[in-house]
Length: 114
Image (tube, rainbow, N blue to C red; front, side, top):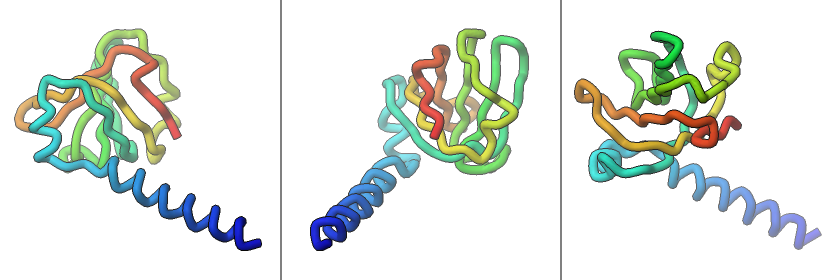
């Protein structure tokens, strides 16, 4: 029983640590401009601009999002109608677009939906 409780406590502590590492930090984002990084957060809204550009707003609803995921090209197939309110992790190049943080992706392997 003690091992079970200890395991549960350690798992909870580790989960809290992992979540803390994924928090968005604007200074860290700006330091990583032009580099590839991973961000995890909740999808709040999205806009399909064209068949080769989709914008996913994370951490808040547009125009108050923390950052935007720009999906460029048509190689990413996500269940877009059901992605809202889901946590996702995205790995891509950190950029700024009109003074807003943006992560640019073009392949399905760059997404992890939770």
